[in-house]
Image (tube, rainbow, N blue to C red; front, top):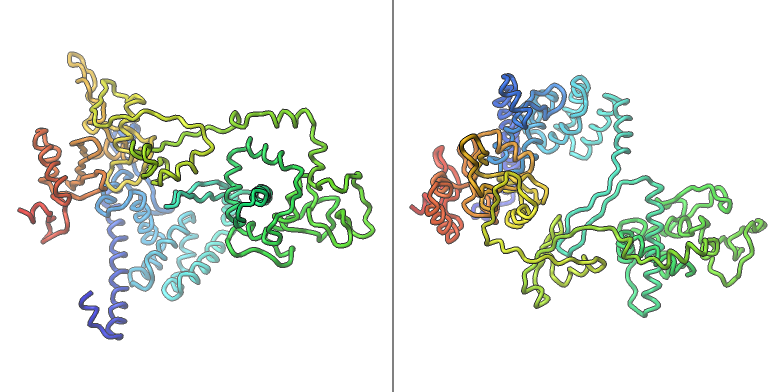
Length: 587
């Protein structure tokens, strides 16, 4: 940056232009390296009988990571390339797939990429967008978009690309739309620093309308409760968010709706009600009802053609399906000259209490007498905190399954409506082992608490459902030599994901555990890596041998030096074709 500080305007512009070229060249080289790695691992490992038997047990096999017409590659080889690229194996798999697609299916666009005339991420997105097409269809797209790839901005290019994909196979596009409609889902995102999570759903339009209406109804009740209690008014979005939480407690929600069944369904927010239905804060709809994105056309006796309303206002809040809004000139919701068609009712009676009068009395009494706790769904949430946090009421608690860290005082927001079971503290300093090959549940619990994350280099998975692998392979009984005792335990366990388990088992990887929670890996091409509570670190061979040697004294000494000097033995760069390390620099 000292050099840049002396640049004038023209020099800065020239530097920015050259940086773009250098960055694109490095990204092209990254793609080319992925393609070459696939070439080096294109041999079929199942060509021999021994290889076929190994593949049936989970060993390496050929897979086609790219689209139709691309070379096949050994699936387990991608793990070592991912380690060198310092990425998760899935990211490396996508890189190899994109490179093979560009080279073998999109040669015109690949020439543009090699000429550094476009952003590499745009070309990679093109490769993924055409992966489902046949070779001939992809060639048609390639011819139609190569020029645009070199000259258009990404937004314009993707519009052209979409049109060319449709032209290449209209029937497949229509089928893809149908398939996309079948891929409905509900997902829960990661917990943010405030302890909140996003819930994203892709559902039928009609279901979304009624869920939206129910949220509005619950929000109205919560707002009315605030008003009755004299509490400060809360924003509509906040009320709808709290209302969403009530959906997870159906029994309590039913009790709430029954309790307020006779309340007037009139939001104290008035026209502001629609703002919550929009989903984006500050974008509430206040104009023509026919322009509402939540307009619903329903066949109701009381609704004539063209008489539509908001889902959050008139369309869906009434349990009997009638709109809440009333046309001008008729206090009972009829237009001028329209016959009543409804039974007489008390003028002071709430318009929403009609369904309650028709509800079977005995069933209503039964519902009101049910203990909501008996109908609650069951879920297990693991929350870890220190003893001092319980005694002082302050500190940080870690919640598993994406819960993340949060303050102890915020734990009530998570557990406030639950029946809590407190489990005794497990002393993880004890070395616990078992003679059996399979890990019993009590041992799996200790292993997870010691190593909650997948210890494969650069892995991201945190789960209780991994494969518990023996770092030193388990020695089974053989005639005349029983299996050594205590091989399964916290001292010899790696909770790996299934893919990483296969990689370790069938390729030339070794892993040792100098202490619980610390794993030292050696890859087939002699890269050494240390995975501990601080992450993944490339280390030199001397430290790797010290941490995995037969002598426990040497292992403990290396750990002590490493703990006192966290950067000791780490590879920090390359010099003249060999790796250099901080331990070498210190020597």
